[in-house]
Image (cartoon, rainbow, N blue to C red; front, side, top):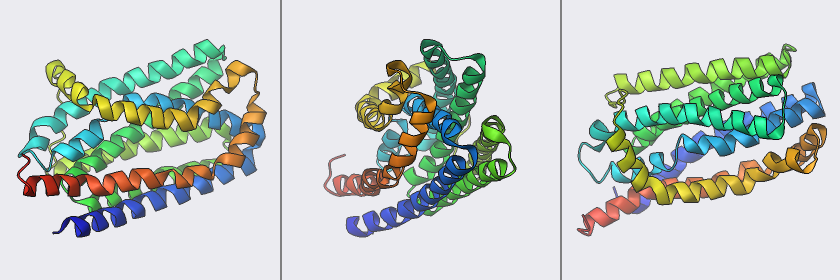
Length: 284
């Protein structure tokens, strides 16, 4: 397949995945804002912004590095995927700890700390779901990634909307979201293993150090990109902005998130094609 066709195919599948997720997320945010009110929506927006920054720890460029290297190196996934998954599980625990540290620094109550922990677990589980999808993206099976990510997002978001519609409140909604997201991640990883993706967990510290060292440049770009769009809400409690005002602010700017997918889609679409071109040119 030519590089142009490869990029086009990748872009189509990535757009499908992102479109489903973005539309569902937007509907969920409308439901939260309408049915829970400004302050609970502000709490959710704060939780999401903080954990969206912290969850960078679960994937400090590892997915992109795997997607880039797997088509170039024979048996890369068989040798590396299990170690990457083990590392991500350890980093998931670190992510939750960072979220709790943020809550302590902000002086929040135990109730807010519990919400931060729940959202940290939920976001870490989503990162593991993304890893399952990235394995198939690395295998140039974008349609499988679309299936995993689309099904996972559909199940979690529908469960969350149902919880809000049933009058469960923010705590119940987060409990439902977290349980659904953990289940989706376990399902995706189990499904991937059954399809021969070799994602059995391996704890290998030496391999982890090598993986982190190689992904460091990608990690830096990822962190500053995420931080740029999330740090405003995360800093709000430290400059005296209340949760109700955060809710009103977030409702006004949330539409921007829909457009933030564009750079990610473009990069993901060209990764495999760039590797293909360099291979054909004898660079490896």
